[in-house]
Image 1 (spheres, each protein chain N blue to C red):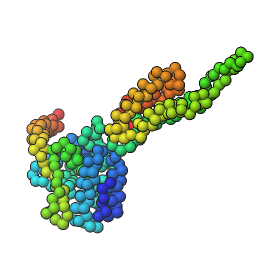
Image 2 (cartoon, each protein chain N blue to C red):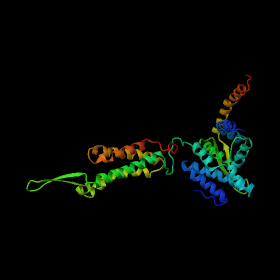
Image 3 (cartoon, helix red, strand yellow):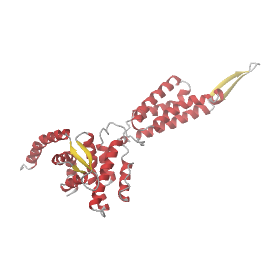
Image 4 (cartoon, rainbow over the protein chains, first blue to last red):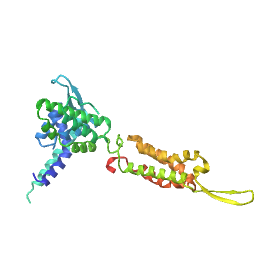
Length: 112
Length: 207
């Protein structure tokens, strides 16, 4: 990927990655390392560390909540889950995103 | 800072570095950030105990994470930084303090006051002396007020910094204004600098 490609991808990711986190948490509550791996595998974050400022922000906005779970292994784990406000935000994003994505696809794939 | 004694040295150093770089965050958000990443490190090291270097590399640089965190902090656009930070506002307020001290020295310790005495045989003697000599040590207490009012904003932090800067700036103007034609004149530069420092926003990014 060239520099221009990287810049475009970075900018686009910034706008949507928080909704991807919400979407992953809609499926089931998860902990940081698992979320980071899922997002990295999909190329949605550039480094694991950038996930945590995002989780802090989502938590501050009341879109996700966290709690320590003690019965999931040798140590307590901090699990993140979606709040009702987070679900509503994700639904709103989906309503906007799908037609927007389709419009962009149609535009960039248009033959000259 | 929270304790991460259970983590290996490089991980503790990484967290300590991030802690230093995120002083602008509100304390709860800063603690949540560090706690989340510490939990990530514990989980990752449990899976791969010998992989600390790779795990830290996957986390990315503390600089990038801090930049993301400070930009993403709840209400960080309007809230002042919580710790003592040096930025443009602080620099101007330090300048105001220096100018106030210079005003105190100039007004109090230089022989600028003129006194005229007349002897019994009608000879008038004009002497120049310092305000200190003319009024006694008590004058220093009065002249120290502008210094104190410019020192306080330099020491404050967090929300108190923003509010204290306004209170001290207003008090300084109220004190110097009426005395503008006498000793207040020497503190005008400090007042101007304090006024600029008062209106500058406290965010570090404005430095």
